[in-house]
Image (cartoon, rainbow, N blue to C red; front, side, top):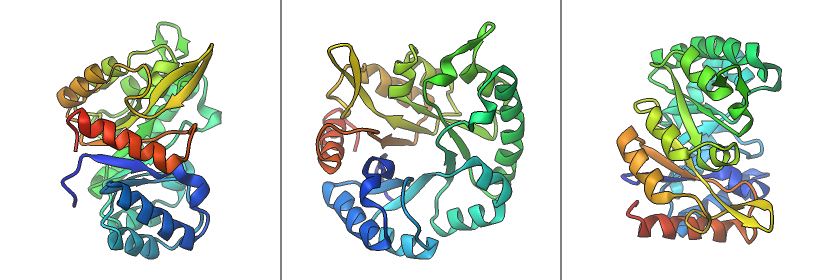
Length: 254
């Protein structure tokens, strides 16, 4: 396992991950930029063993994933086997299924996903939930995100706070990371900038988020992996990943 604490979320370069050959070329580029770890998401079909070999050949650890919740629930044994093959501790979902996006649904998902998360824990894996901004809608006196973390099993259902989407929803990324101390092993680093009145994704350190506060919160919360992602890039996405990595290195993360 790498001693790095920064990973690249492959969803950033999803347009370059359609075939196994594309994946091999792209992972080499990610490695050449300087990343030592990746999160698997947004790629086309590839055999798990082939992906493992490509990652190994390029000195890249697979530290987390985004996979459909339905697959976690219904194809559990295969999901566990893949993560064990990759030495990947953090299976995660990229967003709440649409059918759960209401007051009752947040509670229901927290309970149901906790059962899956507890099964993962029995196999030495840790379930992570990645937020967007819709979870910051309030239902009574609680946001959807509060419901998820208050109604789920704190020992098994953990967080992947996305800094951009928390800010997009009117929340404070540093506060959310700090409030989930012990449950926020993985965080998505993503910046926000403005063009007129339009919010845009930006490279980490190139936008308006309060990175000193976010980094302090990550340290306090015990974050293990700081995963760089940019949903939409204003330039070549590989260049965007390189800029984010350089900026994070300047901030003291390696």
